[in-house]
Length: 238
Image (cartoon, rainbow, N blue to C red):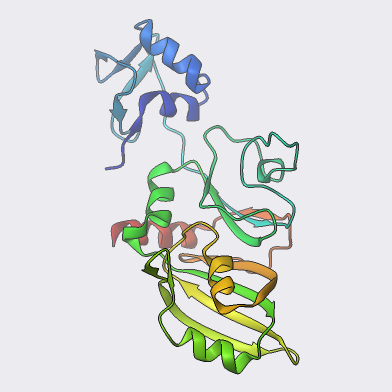
């Protein structure tokens, strides 16, 4: 069963902020299964009985959101440079975090959730979760790009995990590349395009694992459907 830090569970349940929850625990006001809790202990909110001042804390159902991140937004809660962040586009939900990153000039699907264990499954390299991208580039004809992608391409001495690719000619030196990768290294698609010696004009993430961007417009978001939530659970169970 998934387990989480107790202070995080209290924060997600709306009891207090994470820091205030730590103070509650230190003061001896929190119990887990009848025992006085300690800061940093792990709990399963679905099965453990958690009480604050002898009142039971009810578990909160995990939230999953699909957002079409627009260009110009940073994937962080607060930005020191004052740039707009993705958290300004979605509801204020305790414990909400992002599932992987997209850089400021990349758009497309960004999953956000309060389910830390689920987020880890969708981003950890060992699960090899597929991400799909659409990239519009210039600098080489499609035939050359196709030939180069057919060969292993290494970045930082490690071959990029390309599941499949398709290249479509848009003009004399402009092409559209559809890429499926089973990794999410930092700026991996842009670094791959640098290896191909092409300039990225537009980069959009079309899917992450079983979740598709679909018809969401830039800046729009939606909650995942029950069917999509089941698909995420299936990835976790695999």
